Length: 452
View 1 (cartoon, rainbow, N blue to C red):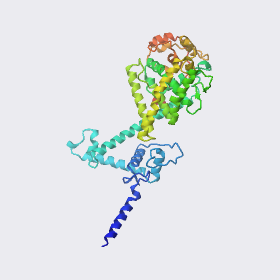
View 2: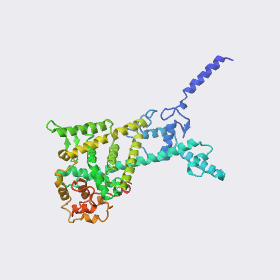
View 3: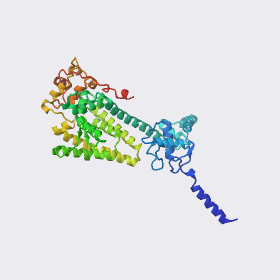
View 4: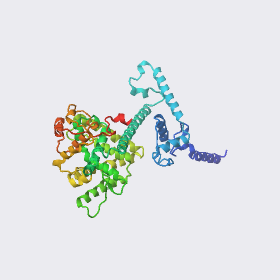
């Protein structure tokens, strides 16, 4: 026997096996773990395809539906990855058959166990299967929990983006609180937009009236500034709330130059550098409004706001994770949140400088002592023939005043003459006989009903 020929043949076989295309995933080219759902696939693509089919997930491509799917970029576009799974032979019906088979096997095995071996809780189901190790059962349950969390987070981001779209598309947003009076137009637009958000962002509509006023008074300046930053991202100018384009010249006074430089350096430049998306900025707006640490809020309101804020943070992380790798996700989320201290600091500086505050729509043009008088006058709509007394609402502290008198709420938010800790009755006395403006269709009190 020719030993050398055997040796050479063995080497050739080994070489052929090493280059066997079945060793690599047909979707991304990573090392395969066998044939799954009709195609040779790696563990990552196998799990991705299974989750997509089980949850009936619908993906979209942000580019031309021709994204490169390989080992390093397979998470960049889920639409193109799923389409490549289908094109390379993965069959959705194989997953459903597997799911039915596993469910049937688990039920039959559970029924066949002696009574003294029956699991006492649902957490023991995985241990009852002889063909499934405890660790794999835990992993499967964890995957199911992660999938449910991902779906819920994605839905939350979609609802937040929907708030932005609805308010931007509403033609009444620019006039609902200010008519054509130009002197307060910037501030009125900012306030009306914020109230629109507050009416749709859970759980703010559920908070007691006094807590709503307190919360929005605290958040209004940062929210208005963030909205200005958002509108300026795609412009070479700073776009003010009244649509004025601000461009610095040598004739501008030093305070304005300094604050605009801070907005550019600390807010606009960092967001432009990471190519921030609309959904991410909208989520930051939600985080500004969901502020649980405002002094004077009731404990119940604090807890509701904190829970909602944590949910939005998780949703934002999940949204980014769908696009980037885990490491890059943490970096991007950090870059987004790092602008928040600067946002609050710059907003505070603008609010303390009356001239700058007026320019950016963070304060009103009148002096603080006369501000509440002007704001009460702004409540009057000459086209209306009736008047509504705020004292009618003092009977119910939980009345969602947003839906009936948004202008009054705006007055409470902007007026420095009324303490945030005044009782509702005292507030009613301070704002006697205001008149209601017509309410736009976006002033809705139920968040879930209006977003479904």
